[in-house]
Length: 249
Image (spheres, rainbow, N blue to C red):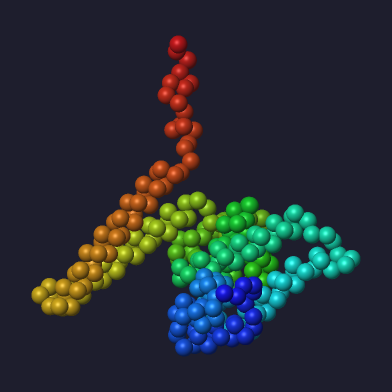
């Protein structure tokens, strides 16, 4: 099985496979590559519907040039900080690909990956533009997508500039939003039951769908509440040991 980076020809073969609606595993088999290599390549470069082999090749060459820059005579010697920055960049790309696999658009996935790997825990639109190398308009479109899933919050920064935050409670809000969405889908399904009748095959099918969504939605909400209660940092009031602060002997 060949190793190393994908070649330009291999990326063209990936694009042809996507155009033929082939699964990642089949494309990987034809290239004699691991399925994970093809999956990561596609997801980090626009996803199956927007993958462009020339743009993917250009992105890879750009990353390679950044790595070689410090090796050119007369330039600075690579430092531990340089190596860490490159490792974080690679990690963000992997994280971005994972979010895309969950259904988020590419830029929105990149925004989320940047927020979670930022020490400050928040970033401005300008900082996101620089990190992701996209236009301000792309960031403006991505933020509402993330907000609709309950994944990002806005906070006021210096002056009138907004900053975007992905804090610890975001995943709880996202799970609750998913549970609420299941509830709405279940109610819509039951509207169909009332319309088509409980004794019809379609009505039975929709009722089963509604019952399934009710069960899953309730389970998600319950698990989210339990996880937040169990994993949230203890407050000063709840973390005090029994008898602590009691002056009596």
